[in-house]
Every structure is written in C-alpha cells, then in structure tokens.
Length: 80
Image 1 (cartoon, rainbow, N blue to C red):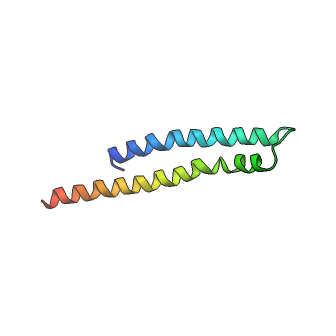
Image 2 (spheres, rainbow, N blue to C red; image 1 turned 45 degrees about the vertical axis):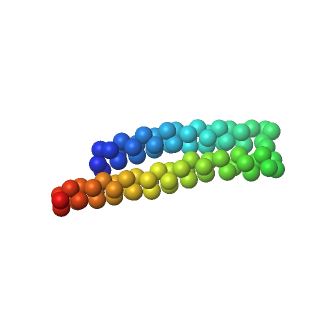
Image 3 (tube, rainbow, N blue to C red; image 1 turned 90 degrees about the horizontal axis):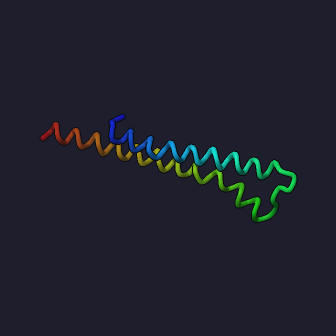
C-alpha cells in the first residue's frame, strides 16, 4: 500500500466501521426490546446495517482505483 492511498483508505474505513458497529448494536437493541417495531419501521431498521456495508464496498473500490492511479503515475515517471 502506498502512503497516500493507505491513509485515504484508513480515513474512510475506520469511521464507516464504527458507524456499522453502532448501527448494528442499536438496531439489535431495538429489536430485542419488548416493543419491537413492526411493518415499515421494522423493514427500515433492518436495512440500516446494510448501508455501511455498501459504503465499505465503495471504499474498497475507491482504494483500488487510487492505488492503480498511483502505480500508473510511478510507471509513467520511470518511463519518462
């Protein structure tokens, strides 16, 4: 990992993982309660933990794009 791409990846990854854990624990606590939501509210809460996971996929794709861009930049500098 190059330093620039690695720093950007970690800067995006860590807050997203914290958000993922917080949302997962919060939704688990809500559903574990005696008055668990039903209907549309239950569906909305069930989808919430998937949002940070989708964000993680985007973060990984962005890292690969950044890393490739840096690699091609180094190759071009060496070739020049």
